[in-house]
Each structure stands twice: as structure tokens, then as C-alpha cells.
Length: 172
Image (cartoon, rainbow, N blue to C red; front, top):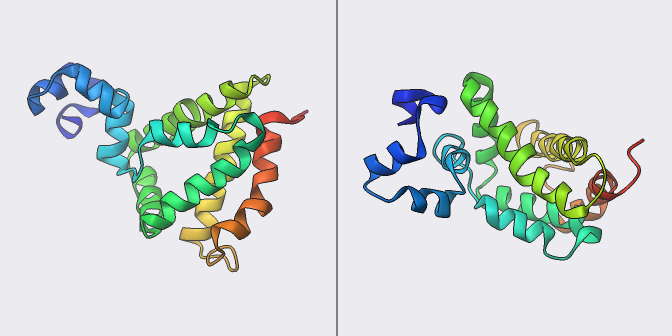
């Protein structure tokens, strides 16, 4: 449907009808059209709702650690090639870029920033996205050593404090 109608032209109802399922099932399993598009076009190797749960489950004071651990574990589990393909997709398909921004900033980091109760949740969500995209670029695209080969438990204490400050600290 996305290839035929584009992102804006494809409705959840039409997608569900073509797949022979109820529209509520699309919303349940993918969290709506953005989640389905993320799975179909961006080929996201993780469940967005599960990521939000994993990041927020321990409360606001552990979210920085949970973000690094969750994203690196998921990306490493997909072999790292996912991130390279993602970057290729967002640089050649405007819909993919729009969806990446929507999924990362609005859905994932937006929900995480809101869960902290801090001020400026939109700015905080965007700052977190810059950090995690930068980590992905350094680790999987540029292969910057020793970041590229570091284990997750080495990366967590190095990167998590910055994410934690973005979420709950003073951002000026």
C-alpha cells in the first residue's frame, strides 16, 4: 500500500483490508500507521512499544542507561547492518526520513521524555535522538574504534550520563 499510495495516501483501514485483517489489529500490533511503516519501510528490528517499556520501566533516573542498553542490544542483534540500511533508506526516501523522525522523536523519545515529567519534552526528545543516531553512525556506519567494537557495558557508562542529562537535567 505504501508503495502504491505513498505514506499519506495509505490508510490503516485500507492496509488492513488488503491484508484481510481488522484495522484494530494493525493498531494493536504496530501502534498505528507510523509503526507499520517503520516496520515495512525502515525494517525496524524491534517492537517500538517494547522499546518504550524497556526504557521507562525503572523510572526516570535510569532512562539514560536503559536507552543505550536497549538500542545497542537491538542494533547489535540485527548485526549492525540494520543501521547502515536505515541510513541508506532515509537519505534516498523522504517518506522514510519523515517516519524515522516521527518514530524516534515523537513516538519513542517523545514518550520517554514525557515519562520523566521534565520541562521541554520536545527538545529533550530531539536531543536524545541526536545522541542515539550519532552513536549508530559512529558504531555501524563509520566504524569508529573503539566505539565500533565496544561491548554494551562499556558504552553504557560512557554515553548514558549525557542521555540522562538530556532527559532529566538542566538543558539551559
